Length: 356
Image 1 (cartoon, rainbow, N blue to C red):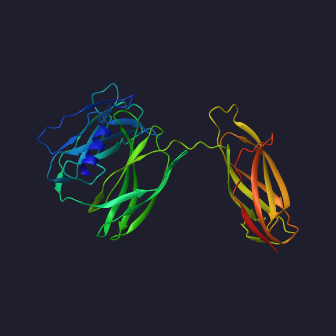
Image 2 (cartoon, rainbow, N blue to C red):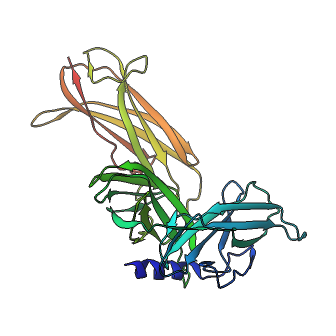
Image 3 (cartoon, rainbow, N blue to C red):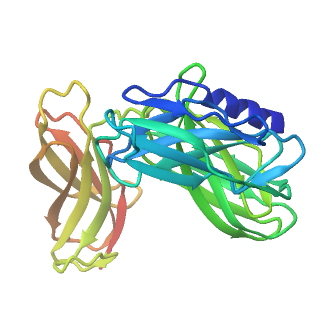
């Protein structure tokens, strides 16, 4: 499996730099035990304007693990031969096993828009290290991609307590060979011997990501990588999603039990998303509240509505007043239709309420 780890990362790193940047590589003498795997790391501007450099290094020694490996990056503009900034940072893996590979990700210190080129080299010095034991494993369940990537999983520890434990995701694209285009970290911390830790991931990712390698490292253990393919984005069948349905009193307090004849507010939030071929960012709608009394043959106690307009995408709140006339157990349903009486949302969550 170590060979699998090496081959996967070698495939992921050897590729040209992204458009808009150029890169230079300072050759490392072959006598050293650690080298850059490519002279063209992936470089991009993040949402805040910082320049991010992603790549990998290889431990060329077949017997000894190494640590304290640092990568040095000079950031340039198109004019001067002097760097605008210099930054240096350690590789993602603290200890790189013999013939092992570790990714790195280094960001500029400022969001300087003049940065257009980078030069990458290895920092001075590194140390030999005792090898870590491969006693960690990571497993995950189904993953979903909508506007963010969502999944949960478990980390299984070996026969000793560990600390400084992290799970890493190295995202790659569909180039041939693929490129590592981003790295995310899930901190775990301390884990007892034989303990299983749950973890989850819920973040926006680069849209060009088609998969990621999932792996873990602690102070004494590490895991094999798991290659995970990202599913196609989940396309919503409805424009609107209803959530956070609640029954409130006049002060906005959530109620689970109310009195006959009292005025309460049925409140919910709705989130609207537009399709790519939407002709207008304005959507008139009617929000319906239907309340039924529970029983073998439920009957409708109340129907109320609220009319409004969605302007652009985002979240809105709706509310309808209700004065219950009978006691018993009731369940509340919500719907959103357009002005042509066409549903534009799946039915919202159902809330049960007791009336006395």
